[in-house]
View 1 (cartoon, rainbow, N blue to C red):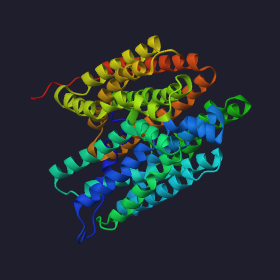
View 2 (view 1 turned 90 degrees about the vertical axis):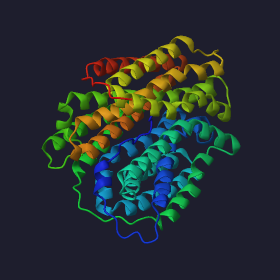
View 3 (view 1 turned 30 degrees about the vertical axis):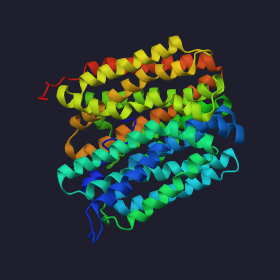
View 4 (view 1 turned 180 degrees about the horizontal axis):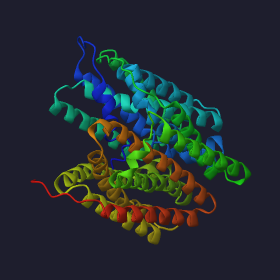
Length: 464
């Protein structure tokens, strides 16, 4: 799908960056560096899922602790993505990318060495912060290295494909690493890759610094609101009630700041356009369905069906293996027929897949059958995301494309994190019932956004 969290990310930042004389640097080195770093941060959004039972056995913490291992990364990544494009402008893409990669690599080492769950969760937060810096800076680095539009388009396509492949193969990689060594391997594997990126950056073009406004009040209130809301969902009880109140207050302040601030991180006026509103809502629903279902079924395969980490990871291979191919098909369909048709078809295929899982999967369902039943959900999500991204980009002026892409991708990541929090809470109260409720909720969300997507303006077909 492009479950890639960053398709179309921050074109404003990329186009604005200027290069200092590159000397003997090669565009291919910049592409390799950008691709490797982006692959790392995308991989960490999904590679941990299969390792969660092993983490729980090693460090304890129960279901809420496992939810935080995933959400600490996802929420930091998503919330700070709103501002890190501007930070990349101010620092220069190459400097921001080097800083983000270095911090991400050190945080990965801290995750692998974590003696307990609190330290692991803390290190995951730092990973998410660094990932939010790496993502827009990596794309800016790639784009600025290719001044020729045709070569740049191919380079950006390779960058995006790498992220898609990383997200798709994350569960499989997590299973292989956890089985071959230990859950800590899913973090230690980042170290040589991070070091390779930093070495490549020594030869990559240097980026100029440019002034860019930062909305610190908006960014801070967004982080507080999202963190408190997630805490309320996961922890519940009296503490959860207090967290919910904090989330409401911070949310109100956030919207007031965004409505009145000169440089809001989320310009509320964007949502007056129906296409923008539908694209963001659809992207959020797809992320809830995909990321949250992967989370739930990672637990299902190991805790209910008794599979080991390797077998559980391989069970996702039919689901994830077709995602990259479907992304390409979806892009071609959107180019030929407009975004509405593949968006609508994709969402309803995903709804059908969710209902099929809801009606077919139980405690005794053979794992190979479940692996096959997950395929329609993945195909539907993969068919939906590239067209909704294209629809979003078509609906906004060119000078706001980067900002709109940041809003879309942040919304997707936030929705995925909140979905994991909600679905994890549901299965904690009884796995079988919680799994069915989770599948039903995801199906309803996609059915609603699928209905709204049908109301988007169509576009005549172009020549093949």
